[in-house]
Length: 415
Image (tube, rainbow, N blue to C red; front, side):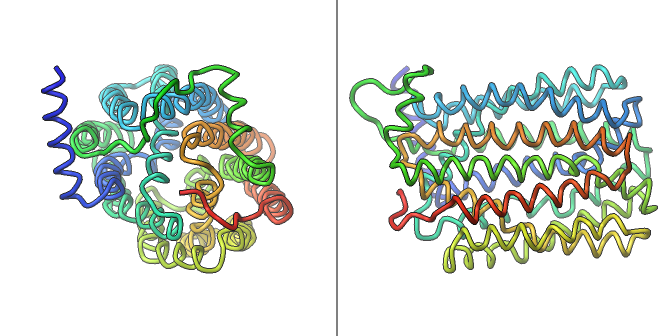
């Protein structure tokens, strides 16, 4: 068994060198998987409504799935620091292959919810993924490299919404959606195999015990962070939770608002999503370089403040052109926050506890998104379709103020 493992490790190492780095491996895997999921992900809300669900139930599904994810994040952070990053990433990738096959045959919104909740267990790998990214990038260019990873990962998905829109225009919303899910089975399998063969472990091996899933090991996080870093990390976690809540308010409801209020067709929404991804591909990396050069905190605040009025402008859209322009403005202003946040969090967090800290980041963002999705569905259906978007603006301003007051960039970033 050891010889076989050694051969597999040598093979993986050779292929990692061919790819160039873990970042290239992750980008390749994400690109393949993202191409498949991108064909249907834009239209999930429309499909769910089409098989009998409603807006409030849509938000409730997202909320329950998110609670499961939070439990998985907590567990996944400790697994990443104790047993390593690669193993849990690969296991979760193969586990996720099952769900496109199930979604492809679902015709009842209640079964859809059950499958979505079970699928949420795959989130256990998220802390390990964020940790391995931070481990694999030098501190001086973290935002730039994270931006490159995100851009390369999304390159094939530029065309996915167009393909999805075409499938649903030709075969109808429900049949086209199921065909998209069936196609994504193959891309999920290829993505998982890439990770299995090529990803390289980054956890440093230490003698003695490593942290277990206990409250005592939770306290070790505080012990390994200075008071200044601890306060900065805590403020980052809360601010990201607020941003996630704001995005949760509107994330599931952009396409519904565009279709029901602005009069945008499914095919036209696919074009808008295509333009979004194209803009991100062209401009995210330059924004990452600017963040590394001028300061991650500054870029985060500017991004939040600039995108807030764009969301409000979207509610005044009454045509394809108006919706497209406001979404492009929102994308341009908002795309720089996430890579800057991830890089700054890595700067503040020692490698030895990065998996656990990342798990709390995931929990903060997922709880925020879950509560946002639930609240957004309620506001959309009972008050006004525009109400979630106004709520987004208020919460984003609060997040920007918190970052301004409580977050400090470290003089010496962690490796």
